[in-house]
Length: 236
Image (tube, helix red, strand yellow):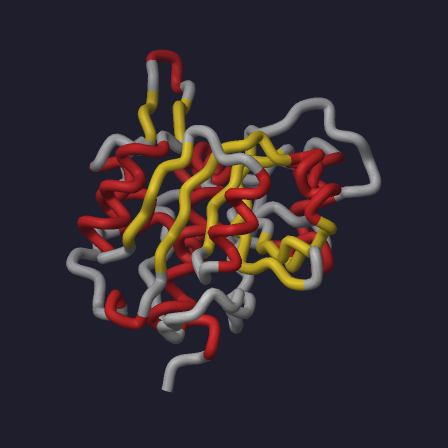
């Protein structure tokens, strides 16, 4: 039986927040995130790097800072299916569709919304809509309709008591709207409370860049993904 958060409804009653949604971090060891974010710790210096499915430590170190969106996708798939490819398998697929571009000099551009949405639909049967302009009221409406939303926010949403220097630049997975609160999972949260976040909508808006991708998770979409790229497809 499907949890209430994923059941189809025919009325206008807001659907509950998605649950359970396991936390997936973009870094192999969650306890190192604070040191990476604020103390200059090299993320490649992580003894658990291989657990992410990376082919080498160097590849892990190059890509982990850019994988917030991939972590959001894995959380959504784990919630829907109970299983999901590794982060680096998902990255391989997203790169195949052009959601990331490694430019001259090694600079990584991405996550690029449109090709990522095509990848999610084609490979994982996950209906995904790009919202280049997403007002706060529309975000709340999508959550109340039972969708998850990958939203662009300031990375400093992990410390919501601080004012952000900018909005956007990082993706978190909004999983519901309850009692005026936006509930979300943060792939780079440095504490458990930051990873399983909840903020009043007006405070969340302070960090929100007004864009994102909605993920539709109806019962009819539950099926095994069509293709699982091998981790070996990730290139330097």
